[in-house]
Length: 276
Image (tube, rainbow, N blue to C red; front, side):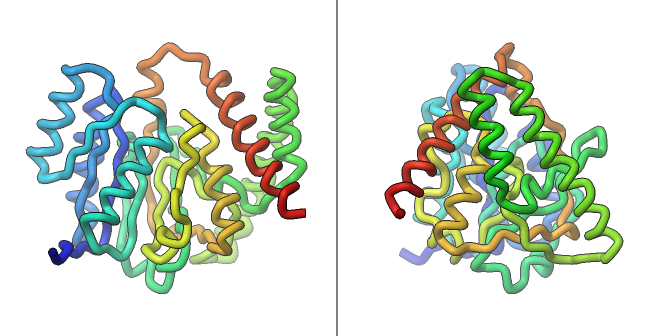
């Protein structure tokens, strides 16, 4: 059977908060002029939210998948698998539902089918979230790992501050030089664009042992291992409203970050030693 063709496939993982999804779909409808399809992947919470997510998806001609709540990587991997099995496309975007698209054109992605692309992502307070990392830093990762193992937030914050300072300086330089495409190490996870060829080369995109957070670190290391380049393309712009579904849960985010980073770091450290 011939697969339906689209320029863009969106995979949107949802959990509890239905208002975010409505706003996301509206922004795609208003700002994306290329052919597209949206796959809504629902991490099941309860029957009430399931029924509402299903209704929103059907009313807006989206595909709907319901999966167990096994985390960010698990849900998005199922959505990517569904997209590859059912459609032909040029680019696939993994997006949080709490995203509003501000500016998007597939023309800005020409020649990047073999790459991962990071747009400009700004928060409601105006903070830039991309690039997540300009360069791979063993020092920052080591500080984060030590802080997580020792349950010491000070070490983690030192690593965060070093990365933020480097990012702010380089963003200013890029803006001054009017750079349209910039090679970076890691893209922020809230809105990631995959060229079709890059997606196939990556294989399984996310580590399903990681429930939440640190998916950027894993993806960056996987892309490095597979010789896939990540570019920042600031002409594509999105607004990240942040903390939609997670904010509904009264959780200690650091516990998730700590657990996820330890899994990430130790997994890739083992791989590194095996290759030596």
